[in-house]
Length: 311
Image 1 (cartoon, helix red, strand yellow):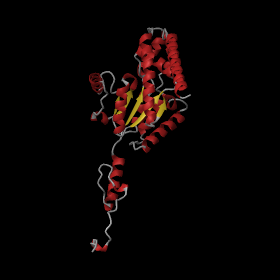
Image 2 (cartoon, one colour; image 1 turned 30 degrees about the vertical axis):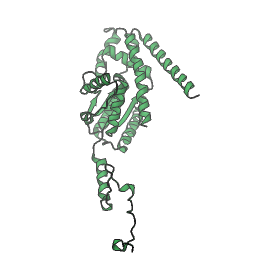
Image 3 (cartoon, helix red, strand yellow; image 1 turned 90 degrees about the vertical axis):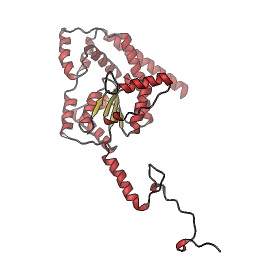
Image 4 (tube, helix red, strand yellow; image 1 turned 120 degrees about the vertical axis):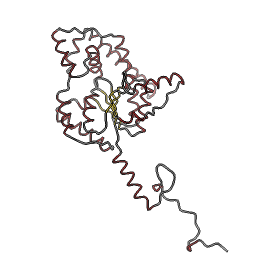
């Protein structure tokens, strides 16, 4: 005689609940009556847990102005170039390098203190494997990551050469020293071409590497010219579109009076006009020739690779 199932039901194997009843963090099943509470908690976490952003750029790409435009609408504190010189997190870079030298492999980055800040990272001054480790750490912790490039690399490198000679990396210092250069009171020394060429080549290599990372992850890549060219209204519209995109991605964006003040400051009065000053560099023609030669060699190499691997 067959055994009767309780409550008169036929004896069948237990039905497996749909996958959407399962928690993301455990493999246990969630009771149907708890589903509303479960999704409510997830929604509250998405809305109220503060997310942060990181801008990857090189010097003279407008990264400082770009950060200034965003941070007035974002609640978190900002840390500029944390791995350069004697900045707050330079020890992470040094520890990373020691571990690579000791073991021959790149370690992971896992310092929770770094996650307290919005970050502006100048990637040309740190090794490629370190940049990738930092990128992965921020990606794992929900950062909205942006790559800011400049279409006119020659203009950027000329501006950088001028800033290195004058030590005028900001508008205030530029306004103090540029008139003295124009009047002949200050005469600029020539650019050290060996140092300049080495740095320019490094910039090309680092940019290619970080661009590949962003493209693999399908993350936003912007250009200086997108935000700091055109009329004031056009620049404001592009800035607003970026803030809207960040808000849609879950960033705590809030438009305030400080946002409009920043727009007035960065779009109307932050131009250093370094393009008009680079001709005062004694060997500017050597600088331009070095940039053209390096750009040409990179284009030739890329064309050769396409011919070998694509054709």
